[in-house]
Amino acid sequence: MSHAAAQKTLKEKYADVYAYTNKVLALIAKEEITKEEAEWVTKETVDNFRDHVNPGFLAYRKTVTKEGQFAAVEWKDAGPNSFMDVNGKEYIDCLGGFGIYNVGHRNPKVLQAVINQMNRQPLHSQDLLDPLRAMLAKILADITPGNLKYSYFANSGTETVEAAIKLAKMHTGRTTFIATTRAFHGKSLGSLSATSKAVFRKPFLPLIPGFRHVHFGDIDMMRKTFETCALVGEDVAAVILEPIQGEGGVNLPPDGYLKQVRELCDQFGALLIFDEVQTGMGRTGKMFCCEHYDVVPDIMCLAKAFGGGVMPAGAVIATEEVFKSFFPNPFVQTTTFGGNPLACAAAIATFNVLIEENLPARAEELGEYMLKGLREAAAAHPDKVMEVRGKGLLIGVEFHSDEIGYEVSKGLFDNGVLVAGTLINAKTIRIEPPLTITYEQADRVISTFKKVLPQVNV
Ligand code: PLP
Image (cartoon, rainbow, N blue to C red):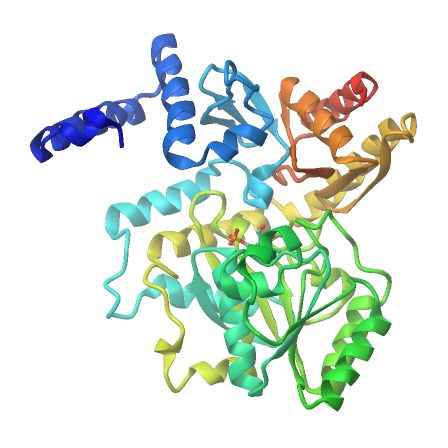
């Protein structure tokens, strides 16, 4: 706190905060803002990120130049597949909020469902039975593969993983979990135990006990770990996996791997948890990624695009056999806002749109188109690009170094295409646009990639 702020009386502080809130509320209410207002917004945003959010964000985002002279500050959505910064520059959104915007930005049906619900009752009483939660749970039981039947709702991906871990512990009475290298399951302490990246885990060790990591895709290592755990009396409660790893760099499982993991789980009496937080909701060309591999988990986690790009929402869905551990006391796992009516309205509308617009199939088609185009562009630059891979509209471009990836993602950004890739994590950039991306926009992404690649010199 500055010296001047410390000197203020409580009354003066409240007056200042009140005036500031009025100014911000007036801005939020505006459809268009002036150039002066845009400048004010940019300055306030950069200053407050530096002084009150975390200056670290300014240091590594490609959207901010070193001395902060230029900072792209987002302001509004510009269409289903793009957004606009505060200065009116438009970007094709190929980051898609790391997979939030499967049905596009501000999908009108999702938005309307949320507005309708907001006008009637935004949040629930917490005591009466809330209808949309019940209806959404039925939809999930109907649409997910196998016998997945009961749902618990949360607000984020990491919370769904926490709930999945608890379910597995309660159902099996065991405490050992097998996760994989390069996995990402979230950053709260439970899900972080399953996440593999050292830089996220190390400062917080020890995490919850009982987690072992094996190489993703290495079925022999998985088998040996199962065997070892059984031999030492630490039987495995569950294996947790992303069917295709997202955050870890779009890593596809080797042929037959997921089926073999399922078999091992069955052999050793363990559960299989699929974390489809990023791969679900049509992203990879099927409604759920596991459908490509014909493998059904006992527990599935959904979040990100589950809220239709409008509401934060997540769900864990499990078989009755597994979920019944929560029956005697449903309060063993709750969260105040989980399954709130706005989130449920958004998720119900999202399934409606995914089906009506046949978006999983569209993801498959556009994904193949983009993969082909990006591969052709990359073929001329084997010194820079190692591989272009993916399924549906979950695409990864792997470079020979973080530096090359960062320069490419920055070049794309300067040319109006946002992809995932930051200064500290750009060896594989992710391209995951809304599933509603048009061929014309896909062509622009490919041609921009083609243009930027030769310009990169690191
Ligand atoms: N699981 C997977 C597969 C994810 O990709 C993510 C987020 O990137 C999470 C879990 C965590 O979700 P959240 O950031 O909503 O907590």
